[in-house]
Length: 286
Image (cartoon, rainbow, N blue to C red; front, side, top):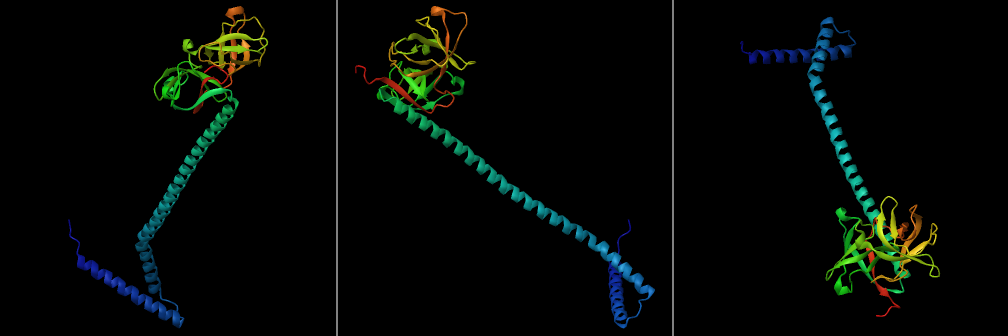
């Protein structure tokens, strides 16, 4: 392969530069003297202009790409700032929603407290409610040292939600009335007025109807939709007149003790943070 003669290239470049300079000087002089440039001058000017365009093209390309890169980086930084702002707004919105729910819970708890003035009660927080047993149990932060005992009724969101089934010193386990373990959920109730009552037991929960199942009913009284249901106070640590819910229907073709009445719960089970454990009515013997 033939070696490149660097000295020849330098000499050619110098000749071209000198020629260009001379051409420019001649062009300037002709312009001042208003003399029309010669054909040779025109050719040289065109050649120099072409060479200048060829030599300058890579630099212009690099300059354009650098500007594009700077624009891209600016856009990326702006997007990153916007993304942080959106994330913060989302977090703030979620926190606000959580505070709103907690505020509603506190209001409901305060309202229920004002309606339970005839009962000795223990306010408590729900500390454990596992997704695996969401409908069955939960744990509260009060126990035997606070006066909690087995079978005590637990209320939240305006109505009864379960009863105590296991007591430790500082915590207690609550069996929820939405559980399918009906033996733990039996709660004696009264349907209708004190003058003409019917008694029965909460023995189950119908998830499709979102309703307690009342059985072992003591009367053939015909119930109507909206009849109020409260605890009867006839069993163990179950004080009377605690709100359970209202009648929404009855299973067809059942009679006497085989009757099954459906009661819509007064309480909401999906979000319980605060509860009251009912020890007894204040009018009961201590």
